[in-house]
Length: 220
Ligand SMILES: CC(C)(COP(=O)(O)OP(=O)(O)OC[C@H]1O[C@@H](n2cnc3c(N)ncnc32)[C@H](O)[C@@H]1OP(=O)(O)O)[C@@H](O)C(=O)NCCC(=O)NCCS
Image (tube, rainbow, N blue to C red):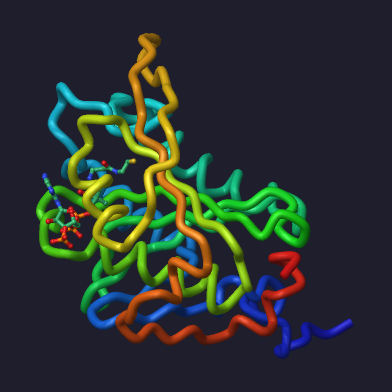
């Protein structure tokens, strides 16, 4: 048997060919080499040591547990993918350089048409509008590309930047929750946006490439 040159990573797993392009950013599924570069961005710092903005305290693990946990998380999301339960952990690139990550997750998407999102940027890239731009890009994928009806997100009450992104894009408050990444429950603000809310205001242009080959994987 001879090797078939037509079999590529992107042909076998079309999510690798998905590209979401916004004004300054490209969002795509990271390869293992990209993950190594992304680890370096994360290790340079995402938040100050006395903060924990995430629901799971992954960002304060010491090396080498940090790097191993980071890789296992991304590998786990790839390996556990099914149309019933998926989480797309996208690399954010600006001028070809990694600056952070934007995730979008769904359960039984074909039925629920609901996504939730999470994100982080290296500290030097924060406060420049990239967080807003990458969330808008992934909402364009969800609402315009995949016909989602609802997008949810959640942030600790003191996370002004994350809540700032949600408010700025027009999410509505959706009650309070709580998470305990470090063993102590802390209050969160939940946010919700409907497709009608998404369509109710002008949005910056976003282009999506390679989606048709992925629709079945998304259950869309
Ligand atoms: C949350 C995060 C992704 C937001 O991205 P960002 O690029 O810093 O945010 P932006 O510059 O796009 O700002 C978005 C909005 O929030 C506002 N904002 C940003 N930082 C703010 C702050 N510290 N205080 C108040 N408002 C803030 C901005 O003014 C902007 O509002 P506008 O569009 O109405 O002007 C980023 O700050 C980050 O990675 N933080 C650490 C990790 C984290 O908290 N992840 C989310 C966990 S839920």
